Length: 428
Image (spheres, rainbow, N blue to C red):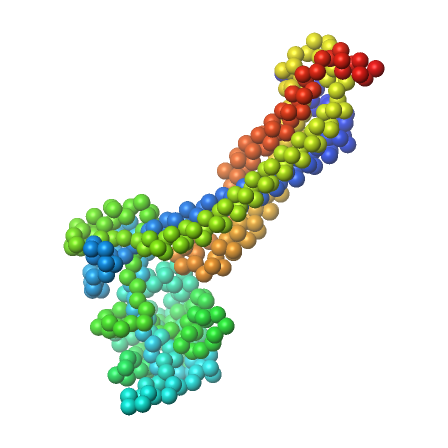
């Protein structure tokens, strides 16, 4: 066998131009396969993260199928949220307010609504108050899009936090106060600034629509107790995010042990889950189709190149068969030559992949993140490693071996079935 391998190497050196063409076609097919394998694996990871997120984002509801959630106190929530099964949790309320005496971002777009006839006049809301259980009970803080850079989370209902942009615009710092009007009774509240946070979230809640009430930089963060008695919040959340969606039943049993009534269940939103999975499934099918086309085209091109190259070597094969070389050794010799070229192509493709893989993965993740994913899912997608993985290299080796066998087997079989005397006679 070693003799055949050495002969295969000598044959490659003898026919440099022909083998260079075969090598280039193999390299292009291998490189395209590597890119498609990378896209396929990244899509599969994104699919898995999406499935785990939407199946793991759970809420507490009554078990009668109504979907109605029980009213949970802040203390109950703190007890339930203290679990090793959780990646994060969301527990907050949001209400519109009228900020008094503040120069708001996008404030130039603010116009006061006209009061209704016979009703108590109320200024149009120009900001929002978010009441959080703690600094981890909102995804923006849990996953780093908002970070406290000075001071701390409010300790009492008399304190609040502002974004660094809003504080800088108004020359405010820790210990200063802000005033806003809350609710239809127009109760005026003056709170002390206990913290200032950096904000990298999407600034406009509605794209291309500017107003101070819709600008996230104008948000005022307060402790949950500040809005605990308000039932007419414009936005509220009370959900858990499991590390592993398969641990849903275990988490539910833990909550029962902590005092959750048996009439309640922990469940995920099936409608939201099905919608998210359907969307990512469409992308997965496109990538799978792309990979299939690349594999088919690569096999076809290499097959044709190999066919023409081997047809030129009929006389050589006839001589080998005439001197008594078995068909199996002839096949081994020809396949060895292809394998040597394929191995060189793999090595070069892997080197190219070290530089090519990160931008390909980044592009795929950018397509996914542009769908405005939840912060937790966005964090998981961003955490996908963009470097060329050993799995892709192993898949590349396996697929290349299959490519060589498929492209070479038919042509080799068509040659070795000929009678050597006939091949030599045709040559003469």
